[in-house]
Image (cartoon, rainbow, N blue to C red; front, side):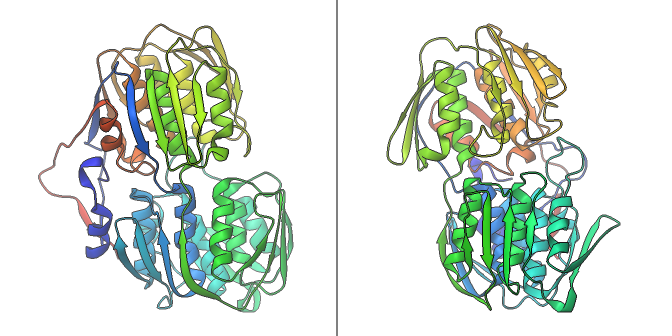
Length: 458
């Protein structure tokens, strides 16, 4: 498990080629004794959503990519293991820096078992299709909070670029006409982060120019574009709703450092808002946090920006607020569960509207076990603030809902036990270590089985 007690485990997994797997219900859990204000300093890791796109993007590069600031999270471990299974040379330089050389990859069929463990598996389609003109990839796994994850916009774009795409038996099988994609004008029917990045990956080596309209604008999209440009791609307009990519003959090796994680930072900001206290959150880009900071200030939380840090403190009671998730620069859907948990302790009634996913409120039943008063009506949650939450035995149902359960446990009176923590460890590096250092009473409890369930990566 990638917890605070297992620092350096990423290097260990990569050195030996192993992935930990669990069968059936997970046994490990977090145990939290809540009610303690957070005080101190937390350093933010590299952005998960950039890392899981940048690692497969290395397939497009001839030579060695050195990627710095890779977070030690299970999603990154799985992505790197997929590259190794394809024939890439993956070497650890430091705890957070990897050298990736994909020139040895000859197969466009990715390890299906590994790919079903994470959502971002679909980035392998764009990378393999762009590099080799074909790809066979499993449908994405990872969190499940809105039914099967649609990839229709990805397929629409690949088809426009001259690929034949078939979805069969849980696989996406794509092949470019003539063995190489061609540039195209693509209008996304909905703003999709995944489709925007995937089509960028497919287009950088395509013949001619590709234009992606109604593109998503999240910071990690800009980061992936900057990574590709640093290797020789010609991408313009990332961060706007129109991205133009002129295909090049090849990309060359180089080095790049991933930006800080906006959602990890926002999660710790929400944690101090809920518990009270004062945190200095370092290694951030404050501009990326504006939508979160402004909502917290509306709730009575003080946020002071520095050059690469934010100071967050809460001394008085929380005030009610309404929020609606929207594509960037709007309030991020990945912060909705954490913020709803904090609003459960605010005075008055708040309304939270989920504007990105059809269903992202599965965690509400877990908060109800702790005394929260939340009613869900379609895409809107009506949150009646309560005086306090009480510790309970709860479960994380997905990554960000899991982070919300941690925040609830930190705020609650008594002891909270959280199962399903493998979801949380998909996206938060050294969570236990970071929270313990700022005054939280949180522990990782490992209940071992008779035999280690360790499966060697193919």
